[in-house]
Length: 326
Image (cartoon, rainbow, N blue to C red; front, top):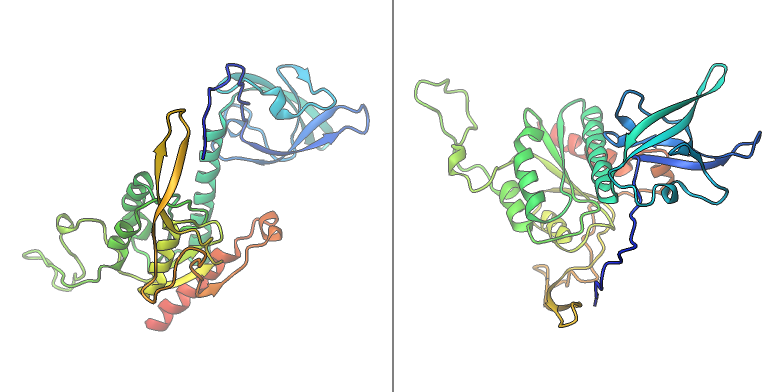
């Protein structure tokens, strides 16, 4: 049950600069600073005439140094979508040089979008690199209409001239679009067409205006993890039940049940379960997450090292299968 309550007039969300950082204290003068460890692509700090970079130390916001116990977010409180002057020290051959730049902050939701876009692009780049350009990559963020349209719109582009495809549903919170995604990846080829006068060796074409959804019939592997929930788990279960490819990663959460929402007179909402989900053999999906064919753990050490073992394993398995079928 959740009651939103009134929004406080004193609420002041903090602006974000698109940075990951660590707090440091100068050994010389005791000044507090924030050393940049990562700059989020396309974020505020990456733009402008003087982009910030890892190793730079933010020493002041709005020309005011940080106080003893003050955090960077505290200093940016109430400054979403605002221009702020950022003072930073940049290391060089002869020590640090102080610079100032003007950045426009973003809110938390925009920062989350930027981080997601960076994750998706880095995963796509990694698949391209690991497969020597032979495989495509798609991540489905949620099982909702927006993500479905993104999946359908990107499917042909991601898979163009590729031997196979990696579909990633890790960290997917669920929704209701499993069957519509399956429409695109489960329909087999039953015919092809050749236009009059065309090369008769150009097979494999089918009229796109006859399809209810874009269709992909080449080999696929799917990635799921313990943060794949609800309808994303139904998709992972279906992928293995129907034998479409190899499911790689960690067992999904095991939270699959239909609920509906009711609004109470005080504005609170309560969700009530009304339907269970079961596999063809009678297994209840609730408390029984989809178990990958290929179990691969992603450890905190991997995260620190920016290594994606699950993606590596999915690519290697799919390439092996493709090469074995040729």
